[in-house]
Image (cartoon, rainbow, N blue to C red; front, top):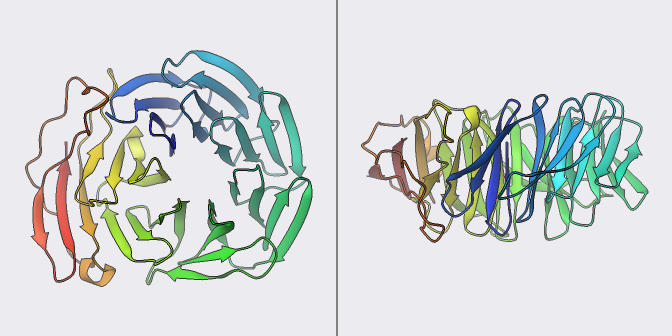
Length: 332
């Protein structure tokens, strides 16, 4: 899971109940906190970091300092949650969808959700029991949609992106969803993120694809044979943040797909290395079946660079394919 400030100042990760916050430009560690239970949702902006745990505890912190701020509470076990920046959280329990901010908690729906998303004006999209539901300003609209929805996201052009099995569709909040793209031989789209220039999505725990919008040309792709992808979020263009298990992350530059940066390790935490294949403008058919290879890479930094440093670019073995470039990195 990752929450990436849209201005790029910070990003937040999690491992279980531990909240891990990093400087955006340098990827260096800023602070960490152990919360009361598994973290279900994260929010980030230049001023605040926010987190909600499975117990329903919502906590706000200073973005750079980690200073404890306000707290809130959701009744019941939280199953899914999304933040609007770091100010407002929409959370789904087994029986309700609620919105919580520093002013309190308000119930939006008397049912839960398998997937949930929020848009800049506070409007909410959820999928529950065969229905896509949109709630905006107290008004509710519903479209029957029997396919299981595993991911939702708001697109800044004014529609919801819906991940259902191996397809991504667009939904205007009232009519039937329409096709955007499809990934062959995939069981489930797991995460979707969007900005005005691109859409990114993940599948099968190990794969990330990034396509331009609205042309839908391939910008890049990532494959992690040894690690699990736990979330994606756009920061300032051209960076996509990719959260991995064990509290690590990469930042992928979509203007220059061979540029891949990693989060630095917090003091006192185990340092991890991992293998990742980086593709730029290639096709999935070209990539299929090509095993990643280990390559030399710079050692991890002991000290994070100054904020104006462009970050740690990880260098590896470059293989020229018929279409695009595939790069195999051992991220240290």
